[in-house]
Every structure is written in C-alpha cells, then in structure tokens.
Length: 374
Image 1 (cartoon, one colour):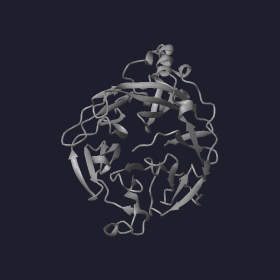
Image 2 (cartoon, one colour):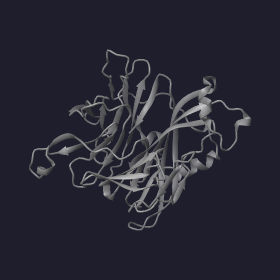
Image 3 (tube, rainbow, N blue to C red):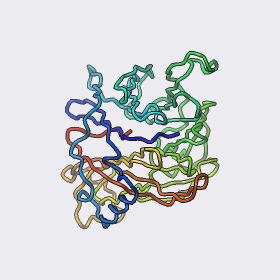
C-alpha cells in the first residue's frame, strides 16, 4: 500500500563544483491547499492566466539534507552521479539510492540521517539509466529496483541463492544480472502490470513495439508491434484500475488508460487531463510524475524558455530549431504542480472524473540545476 508522502525529494547539481545536493520540498506548503474548496477557489481567481506571472517563483531550494561529491578521475571523463532513485517508495519516502557510473552504490536515509553502503552493480552503467520499481510480492520485506542501462540489473533483498530464499534464511541486498530486453534503442515508456510482477517497456524509434519481462521467471516476451500510449514512467492506480502518465503528444498532458491488464492488443487512452497550460515559448525538456499517495501527485517538468516572434505562433511549430541560435535561449527552469485525482463512486466502483489542480511553483536554474525529482 502506498504511503501518503509529505515531501518531494529534489536532487540538484551545482554546475561549478559538480556537487549534488538533496533537498526535501514540503508538499503541504508548496504544492497543495488544505482543502479541495480552497483549490477550486484559487483556480477560479486565476481566470485562465498562464506564464511566469501566474506561477510563483521559488527563490531558493529548501536547505540540503546531504551533499554527494562524485569521485574525481584522472582523465577527461564524466564524473557525474548518473543515477538517483527511491529505494523503497512503498515503505519510505526518504530512502534514496545513488550509483556511480561504475556501479558503486549507497543508500541515504533522510529520516534517520544515515548512510548504508550497498553492494556494487559491477561494470559501466552509463549516464542516467532507466529505473523501475517492482512490487510484485506484497509480503516482501523490500521492493525490487530494476535498472536498465547498457545491461539490466535488479537490486533485491533476500538470499544470495534464489532457490534457497525461504523464511529464516540469511538475507541481504544483492545486485543480480538479468537478460537485456530485445530492443536496440531508447526506452520511450515503461510501467508494471500484474501487481508488479511484469515490467513493460516500449522502445523508440526502432519500431520494435512493446516487450514485457516476467520478474519471477526472469524472461522477456514480445507483446506486440505497438507502443504504450505514454512518455516516460507510468503509475498504476489500483483503486481505479488505471495507468496514469504523460501523453507522448505535445504538450504532454496527463493521460490514463485501463487497457494494460492483458497486453493482448494496443491500449487506448481513456482520459486526457490538462494539468498545466504553458506558453508556447516554454520548450519541454523532460517530465516526471511522482505518486504522493491518497490520489495526489506532483507533476514535475523542466522547460527551456525561448525568444519567439509573434509570427512564430503557429500551432505545430517545432521549437527544437531554436537550439541552433543560443541568443534565442532564455532561462532553463523547473515547474512543480500539485494535482489531485477527482473520482466518483464508492470503494470498488470508483471512476476517474478529472483532476484538481492545486499549487504550482517554478525554480529558475542558476548555480543549482534540478536533475532528479523523487
């Protein structure tokens, strides 16, 4: 069962010294009103206003809990920390794992202000691999963390030998090497089905479609030559029987589907939910959906502001050409929006009616750039 979270964890990188810092944003203060009535009243007062004037600016991030210094190298090489993730989101919002690109890992517990050294993943992991949490066994002591990079690994808590993983056996953390998915290109979207037992990936642009991984049998199978109707990670909402994520079509609004249960046919989107009306000169760089529990979510986006002429206001303009002229590039910034699912019906028969938008804030990158929202 998902806990009700109090914080959004933000990992920022200082572009001058390469230091990474962890900040915890209080969602009740910055992202949500105390009641639905207050959120509705605030929305009606905005009268459709959009843009920087409508989104309050966060002048500085909350004080850091801890800082991470990447290990320096003797060659001209990436010295960044390519990977941060929540280690056990079902049980804790404060256990954060980080890995070097060589596979060395550590877990920081923000609640106890302590560090736990983890086993090494071994081998080069590249820059910003895809991480997926699987909660297939509701009785498991910890969730499994799957990491897709140049290889495919799982961090699990149990016996070293899966065959002898029984109650009373000695348990600890292990990185297991797994067969890579049968795709050759970028993972466009990913989610879990079957209560977390099966991981589903869609690739782009190799047109392979969607493949699935059985976390018990540890085998891949090809679902079909179609893609999940999402961009990035997708959250499953058990009491609604829906998968919620970002649409792959600009401007990447939230969308939902209930068609992922059997994976026998291409799923169709059943809901499109407009979470943030942004100006056209905000070029989207990335987006992350964070499940806060209790039907609440944080929509985290990073934008690049560009300078546009009035004649550039065509509906289907591709803003990527602005990167060819640096004089047209403005601030890079992050926006964080608190949203709440609006449902009807009682337990067992709930239906999604829409979303309620609470508060939004934006943070302009200067010395510190937000790299991860967890």
